Structures are given as C-alpha cells and as structure tokens.
Length: 99
Length: 271
Image 1 (cartoon, rainbow over the protein chains, first blue to last red):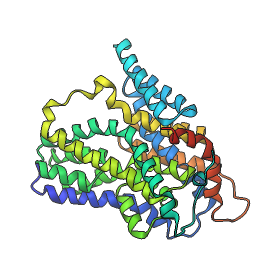
Image 2: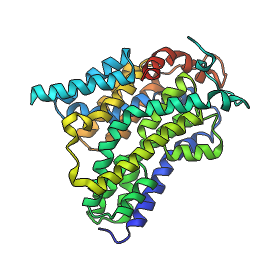
Image 3: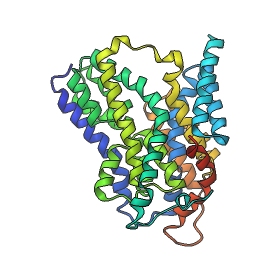
Image 4: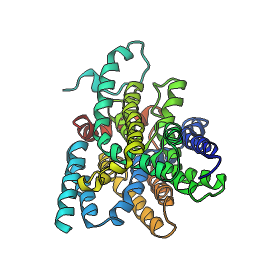
C-alpha cells in the first residue's frame, strides 16, 4: 500500500467535493440561463441516471435485464417502492428459473 | 386531498419552518428507508474490500467520512493497490465523479430555501440517490433543507455503519446476490428515471443517453459511459428545446412542479 495514504484520501475528498459544488458555483455566476441550458439542466436526472444504469441492462444477464424493464414499467404507474419490489421479486424468481 | 402543504412553496417565510419542518423530516426518513436495504450490503462489501486491500480501519473510516462517494472509493482503493502516482489516482476519481457537476448545476437552482452554509453542507452529501430524491421532491412539494438533510442523514449514517460492519466482520458476510440485494441500486435508479417520464423529450433523452452510454461502455470503457452518455442526452434536450413565451424567472420552476406533480406524487408519496 502507498506510504502517503492520507494524502491520497484527502486529495480524492477535495476533488469529489469540487465536482459536487462546482456545477452550482459555475452556473450561479451567470444570471438566468439561456433556454437551451435550461432544457439541458431539466434533462440531467433522466440523462445521467439512464447512463449510469444502462450497462446493467447488458453486462449481467437476462434475469437482470428483464427485472430492470419490469421495474421501469411498474414505476410508470405505481410507487417507487412497488417498482423496486417488483424488480427484486422478478429478479430472484428469474435467477432461480434461469439458473 | 390537496392540503396547503402539497402546493409548491418557494418563498422564504418566517413561519415556514414550523409549518413544514416535521413533515419534511418524516418524508425524508420515509423516502430514504427503502434504499437502506441496498446500501447495507454494498457498504459492508466496501468495508471488507478496503481492509482486504491493505487499508487499516481508521484509513477506511476517513475515506468514507471524507469522500462519501461509493464508486470512486472503490476506484481509489483499487488503484492504490497498484502503487500508481497520486495524480493519476486523483484524476480517475475525478472522472468517476464528474456526473456530480451536472447534479450540482441542476439541484443547486432548486435550493432557494437553503442558507449558504446549508448549501455548502448539502453539496458534500450529494450522492446519486440524494440527487434523484431531491429532484423528485423539488418537482412536487418543493425542496426544503429539513427534507434534504433528514434523507442525507439516513444514507450517510447507514453507509458509514455498514462500512464498519464489513471491515470488522468481512469474512462473515453472506453473498448479497442470494436475495437480489446486489441489484437493488440499478432497480432503484430505474424506478427514479421512470418517475421523470413527464419531462420534455423523455423518451428521446432516455434512448440517446442509454445508447451512447452502452456504446461508450463497450468501446472506451467505464466510467466514461456515465459522463458521455449523460452529456449526449443533455445535448439532445438542448437541441430540442424551444424559446420560452415570456421571460419570467419563476416560470420554469412552477411549470415543472405542475407538469411532474401528479406522476411523481404517486411515485414518491406512497413509497
């Protein structure tokens, strides 16, 4: 292991906090943003969370892929809790069935 | 049942604390509970892996307390084992965490009721589920500090506590795959994404972000799929947008609260 472990940890903490406050600091320097920036910001949750999840659809297996689709469809109608529960139940069942 | 509470509240008033405080705390705890189940195994595994790769207990604890970003903590531990130069480890952590710049830009605009100190603390706690839950909250009843910090407290404390359990009892941990717990986070994020389906160009943004993320994942590799997939979705959203009718700064916030109101209310209030 590194001999300067705490230095690395501290540097990583600073970099992480910088990304977390940075977007807001930069944006708040400009007044009211252009409508295209506005639209992009409005899409951040959908775009980034989708990109985060996308590999799980293909890099795990059919049971995982199907359970993600089920959770997504259930969430369109039901609560978030129902969606996660439906995905989890179908995942355990499919893993059992598909081995 | 539309009580006064359910209407968006965007102005700082002297009585707002008394009116909403306990409800916000309750909702924050309630919304955070379901993902505790996901964080416990994930956090325990991190604690065990950290000790396995040569950190001592105190170094593991300082890592989680100060960085508080699961994916990048794994990356840091992994690269430390390879004795790379410090700057390259820090650069890798920056790449994994870049999505937070976008989170911060988006959610920062909805923190109108936060004092500067509250904002500074809030950004430290801005992990993925925190961002998603706060966006949902902002679009329905409005985001207030009590909600944000009660949600954050559950996640932060759970993360640290499960790290400690994993570090101390690593070898006793059962394989979380048995109960599907290893996959709760992807399912949770999927449910949250679906909750945003009333936003403009939802399907288009979903397909472009997902497509570019997959393409990147299988060519350039992780973690770039998050940033490149995300930015591709934002570009499409920007390209598809139309100029606003009139120039009222409150317009967008109010419009979103209205647009997303019903769907998201269902999605979270009953959770």
